[in-house]
Each structure stands twice: as structure tokens, then as C-alpha cells.
Length: 192
Image (tube, rainbow, N blue to C red; front, side, top):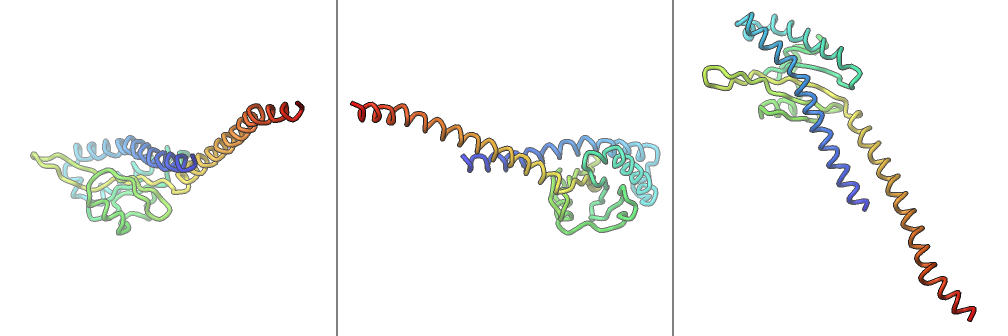
């Protein structure tokens, strides 16, 4: 029973991280919209790094402020070389991401990665130009590891409580059955 509970908790952790990915993809749509708007009105924006960085950082800051209460710690745009192009904290701009994150950036697909004390959901920025998919970088949405750990801890405590209740009820039922099936007949035999 406890092995089954542990397996289910691991499965729920994976499901929670997957739900985190879906939520991050939904939030990233606002940044995708801003990228399209920037490209529409400023076709050279992808080459004009300072201007692009400024506009996307503003979008990251807005999203961060709107989602602060939902445990999101950062919004960032990372280029294909692993350089932070935009961030909700301007001090992070032009910083290189960790080698672990860079390796996931090169894979060019949506993924949630634990790096240090944060889960980073990386969402690729791919543009279809002239019959080709061009990879520009990733949108990075960070959530603290402790948020996921607390959810799992709460689930584990609930599971242990249910297991203890199940064992207590089982012990009571077995004791009652033993009394009715074995104890009572033995008591009657002794009084005969």
C-alpha cells in the first residue's frame, strides 16, 4: 500500500509539473503577442537588440507584477545562445544562463527543468519564415522549487494520514472478526 502511495505521489509530481508547463505556455502567449507586434511595427526589431530588450523586458515586468501572488519568480526571454535578452529584473539582462539550461535551450522544445532552487519552464520562440522554422530563443518562466515541494509534502502528509486511518480501521475490523469467529466460539466452549 505504501509503495503504491509513493508511486502515485511521484506520478502526481509529474502531473503537477506538466500543469505548470501548460500554465506557463498560456502566460507566454502574452510575450509571443508582443514579439509579433514588435516585428509587425518594427521589422528590424529582431536585429535591434537594445530596443527589443527594452520592449520585452517591459512585458516581462508586467506579467511578473500580475502573477506575483501565484508563486512565479521570474519571466525572461533567452536567445538561442543562452543570453538573457529580457527579464522582469533589469539586472539579469545580458547574463548568461547556466550550462544546464543552455543544454535544454539547444533542444528547442517546451520543457520544465530544475536548476538550483527553481523550476524553469522553457518555451521555444520559433518563427516560420520563407518555408523554414527559425529558432530565436526561449521564454523562461521560473517557479521556486519549494512551491512544488510543499505541494508534494502536503500530498504526502494527507496520504500518510489516510494510510494510518486505513490501518486503524483494518486493525479494528480484523479484531472484530477474530472475536466473532474465534473468541466467541472459544468462550462458549469454555462455559460448556
